[in-house]
Length: 500
Ligand code: DC
Image 1: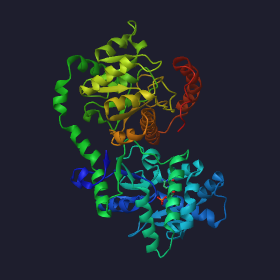
Image 2: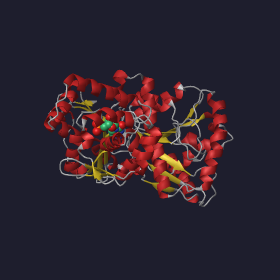
Image 3: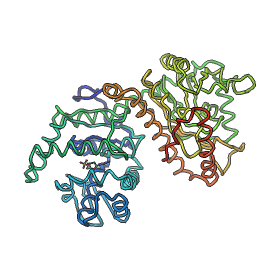
Image 4: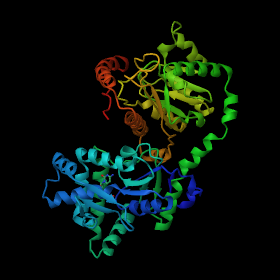
């Protein structure tokens, strides 16, 4: 869906937005992100962070120093030594570079012309992303840029992709310059915007892409007030859907058939025995028909994750080999509607059965990486997830499991056993994306959302309990071993797991 006017979305109580929400606004230059982000900050009492200003400040400093704008490592070194601060002010964010107020200087047309070049360097982006994550870590922020929803905060409460036609954006920029008393040629400005769009969306590192879970707001035909109102309503879409989740917990419990109660009981006893810690468990408030996407490190993952579910039937896609008669857990898997899947190629029958289950309102537990991955190195996610999501539009619940490999009963300091729940992710932009993307590319974007969610949940887990040497070394060993095994299971086309 593309939001073109405020009335495309219902109006709700602004108090629905959680206090610690992160609102990510991405979009091309001149789409009105800053104005709207400031408005949202005021409406919802959030801190406004303009990440473009950070790239602009570095560009300004590099020009001042006469640095080579194509030398990524040199620019990154300059940035890492610098003190770069953003202070929200009444009309705009005050930007200081090493104590000097550069708020006005960074808006000059010369900086405009060079900033995309500077922002394209992966080394520069890595540092900027780290700074931005620090700024928004505790939530309650609205952050605007190009890669906020895709890289900086992949689990943002709301992702808005704010766009407008090239002509509309050129008109707005022209007005801004005129207000500053600068005379700029319209044709040149339009060409410059188009060139920046191209650079921003085609670069390797953190390109501007529409994330399938973003809400697209097209402001081409909107005045400022309506643009702000449309975005303000967009901020409540997930909040309203999340609030609806809790409603029928008792009914859901009563609805669970006896064999599920038995299986969940066995799994929970197992989890207790191994000292499993659950964090952010939305399992109590699962929507119906959700795809629970779990990273995979051990054969114990399905029952351990199952131990954190408290309601509804859950179908699982599990490798065919687990259903051997001599494998004791296989019987339990069958009892809880596990669907055997052939891992080589695309198992049409298994995915069709999974889609039917989702459409009937059941949940589905899948391991979208397709096989076990080295601990500490989740991903890459295979295309099956995207195919399933495209077939069903089912929302995704990302779940990160840590420490299930090589466990010693009763818990271990060496590898803490944890299950982390992310938020429910809804595919607001998918239909619009499929109008010009081929399904394979759409699946890649869905996979990217899932990979980023795993990485983000892993980072949160490591921030709470630092990764141990044992986990690190085991992960390195597994990386090598699994690369060989994956080649055997999937053929040799498998790419190496993406690094964080
Ligand atoms: O939003 P803006 O025009 O102030 O952004 C300036 C430039 O910085 C823009 O060309 C793209 C880049 N940028 C980026 O690459 N990533 C961000 N998160 C924000 C801005």
